[in-house]
Amino acid sequence: MRKRIIAGNWKMHKTAEEAKQFTEEVLTKLPESEKVEAIVCPPALYLENLVEMAKDSNLSIAAQTMHEAKEGAFTGEVSPAMLVSIGVKHVVLGHSERREYYNETNESVNAKTKAAFENGLTPIVCVGETLEERESDATVKIVSDQVTKAFSDVSAENAKQAVIAYEPIWAIGTGKTATAEDANEVCGAIRNTVENLYGADVANAVRIQYGGSVNPKNIEELLSMEHIDGALVGGASLEPASFLQLVEAGANA
Ligand SMILES: O=C(CO)COP(=O)(O)O
Image (cartoon, rainbow, N blue to C red):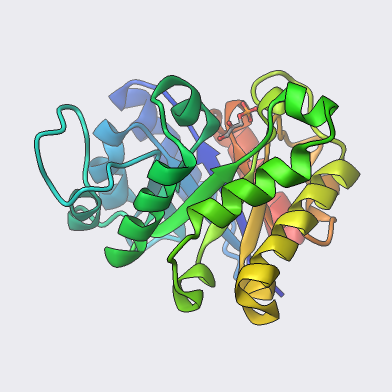
């Protein structure tokens, strides 16, 4: 049984004080369960503080993005080694907002995925189709292609540790969730792609999250699906109570 993984992607939300209050509250109420991994992805500015607050707890703190280079003249960027140096263990890569607004491509997501593994970071690799692509029945092709390219030259040993987040772009922040069946179908196609690339052993180990308007009301149904191992959550992860409900659902799924 794959361990469930619930990650809250705050995107560009919260002041330092709000981030601290959220984390304090979540740490006092987080369920102690071996069945679920709980992750918060704050803005980079708060990573170090939150890692410190969450040490010795079962809450992990992840970065929302990173540059693939070790170091260099990349104003505004953060490197994998920098994340590792403050105790970060996971990084979200290739989020559709990064692809749309910051020119990330399948090629750069591949470079970042490889850099994450080289530095001992677990990548949460995001894939997903636009509404237009869904309406033209291209979803499985687009998503399989994104996965195949992201994992190009990644070893099976590393791929086994990866997390893949399926986030249909039309469902992000819109209140429109894919039906649990549709989400499961695409997550199943992603697992198939991983199987074609690496074999059944890796495909059975890889954890696949669904993301896109996940909330405490729809999480249980999503997690009841065969290929959905967790959720990557934006809006509904911003309040401690709602984030905790999502983690509880993961613990009880
Ligand atoms: O993009 C997302 C998480 O990375 C999803 O955002 P929402 O949960 O706000 O739709």
